[in-house]
Length: 415
Image (tube, rainbow, N blue to C red; front, top):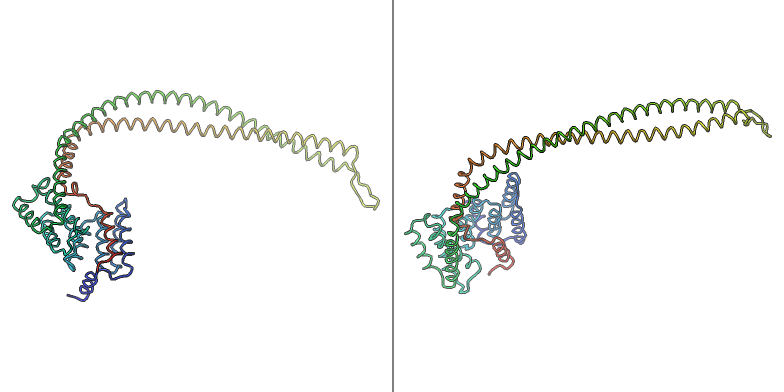
């Protein structure tokens, strides 16, 4: 054995060697429970878990946590590898053997699973405690479920003599304290299988459902044709109304633009008159000296008249400015209405086009659906049969309970 292998072996056999192993196990499990929704995210999560495994001091607990994380990430092959590393250094590890056996069954590797089940039974027979342990009971439940499965839904997967020999060996080895759990699991699986056979009519029902669906699609297609014709007629009417409204808005916009132009010209003329009046007012004032003999401007009758004129023009300018502002606001509002009307027209046109395209797709998909009925029904039958013949359909594995047992084994280590 090389130095690296020896170090790994010692670390795994020694069990909990790191004071922070519980924290590391929790971290691995938490990362495994982060379920990604895209292939890129799943690849990134797997890479991160691999890096965590490499960076973490190897122990039975961290390797087992990694196996659980891989199962959560739907990577059973990686989980098998991790469990294999544990068993290569400690062949008596019951929970690793049990979990490995379950994965092999789920992966339909029945020959390997049967070999592991016998080893699992041998390990149970060598337990020193007369009281059943949680891991031992779970192992007995798995063995019973395997026997029930291979004698029922999986009877074609393993030859009868091999099944019988395996069952005999397991039952001979199994300690008395685990027999009830074993027998109950086998009986419950058999009952579940018998109940599943009551739904053999499902494939036929699926096909009939698909036929009814195709008929419903045909009826819907006729309704869509009618709806589309009604929509087109309604759309044409709306377009005509909108065109008339657009023409009226355009006419109003032109009138308001002309009025604004006139107001602007008039404002410019008045502004010039106002500037002239102010200049006349300033020029017609007298220059006199005050008591300090300093020149000051004094109002005259003429300058007073010009002042009045300038004030009157300023009043007209203010009113004219208000008219210009109102006209500008009206033009802005009208322009916004025209933009909204244009957008509404474009939306109606787009809806009509999309409706026409949808109709064409519906007509094409109807024929396609009719052709796919038999194929879909056959696929449904195949999936149903595969589900009925899958070990995972009958044997439920509780990840949360498995995790809890692992964490409790770390926080309360054995002697």
